[in-house]
Structure formats: structure tokens, C-alpha cells
Length: 307
Image (tube, rainbow, N blue to C red):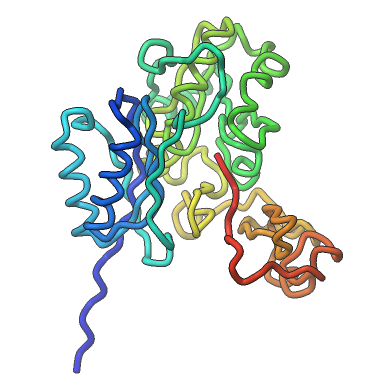
């Protein structure tokens, strides 16, 4: 008897800054919708909008996009679509948050009014091709930039996004008079990051529309080097075409080129580390000999990082 073909899985990455009244109630109803469609992933809801990464069978994700676009608030919301698998996400989480990406500023930033000018992937490629004078700044966390980043990008010593206001004032002032291009995974962090730069006196500020995800779909072998970090079970996805990959990171212990992350086996440590296959065996999936002796409980979460 012939086995039935496995239905293709899709991953959707999306966000929209838009006012949402009663966001906690919206989150409750949205969770029911995702469960009804059989989707898994993570969706954040705030007064200022929605930010999500969900996956499911193509039929379910297509229906989800259709229903979201039927809501006037999300009619123009862009979905970045990639291939996935059922193991990409374990569950579906839909949660309310005070901010979609946290800055903790006393005076809130409105990305609609204060953000940088959108720069399309084609425009960024043309700037690189023409050797234009500009400064491109990675607005992601340092562990994301470690395994993949744009050519000549300025990377930040930042563990979580809320550290950005201090970094801008202390470390980025020297770029204030230059043409600035900001980028992140899908664009949501740059909406606020570019606005923050402008608030701090930067005049010529752009943000890569759709982030690395959109650029990589259009120009997989142009100027982005390495892998794209993602906040799900995959942890990283290739941007370059097969055979064109460029590894820019290395194993923590042996320093061999490698760029796949795991969490340290010691749940009390849980550090995000890069270990090659040989060192995973030798070091028992740990960042140190001490941690190698403290394996994590089976119930512990695999990935406890945050944006």
C-alpha cells in the first residue's frame, strides 16, 4: 500500500505595529484561532500591535493569512514564508506583552511617526554593488550576529534589545553624521531602533524593509554571510544557496569553523554555545567540564533565550 504524501509545512514570520484595543482579550481569542487551525509557534500581542512566528500545514497557514488579511487592521501585513517541519515548534503560545520588543523607555516611541526610511532589499544590494559610503548596523543580539551578518556590519555587544538605548548613547555616537542602515531578522526591531537613533540626533537613517529574511529570499548569495538565527527549535537557518555557504563562527572548544547552536546541558547554566559534533561528544554538550557533570533535567526547556 502506497503511503500518502506528507503535507508541506510552512513557517510564517510577521509583525504589524497597529493599535489593538483590549489586547489581552485579543490574545485569548487569537489563541483559540491558532489552535483551531492547528498552528504552532509564538505570537505576542500588545497595545501597539502583533508579532508572530507560526508554522503548520500549508493549508492551515494559508487560511491563517487569509483570515488575518480580512481584518482591516492587518490588511497590509506582510508574511515572510519559509519551509518548515512539524518539529519546528512544540506548542502554540499567544501572549500579551506591554511592548512587542522591549525598550523600557519612559517616553514611548511611535514607529509610524519616528522610524527610519524603508530601504528595500534591491536598494541595499545596489548600495553594496556601487560601493556607496554607508554604515550598516546589526540591531540584533550579539549571539545572532555571531553566526551571520551583513558584510562590514557594525555589531553590538547586546544580550537583549532593551540594552539598546544605553548602547546608542555610549557606543554609536561616532556614526551620527553618516548614512545609517539598520537591520534585524524580519524588521520589527528596526522599526524602534531606527526611531531611537533619530531621537538621539541621527539624521540619515534607513531600515531594511523585511529584514534579513526578506533580503535572503531575494538575494541569497549577496552580502549576507553565514546563517540567520531564529527563535524556534531550528535556532538557525541557511541564507546562502547550497554550495555557497560561508561559515563565520567557530566551535567554542576547538575553534573549528562551525555555526550550529545548542544550549549548555547544565540547565542552571543554559548558555547558548556553538559546539562541533566532535566536541559535543567530548564535552557532553557543555560549555565547561563543570557543566558537563550537571546534565539538565528532562523536563527543562531546550531554548530559554529572549529577544
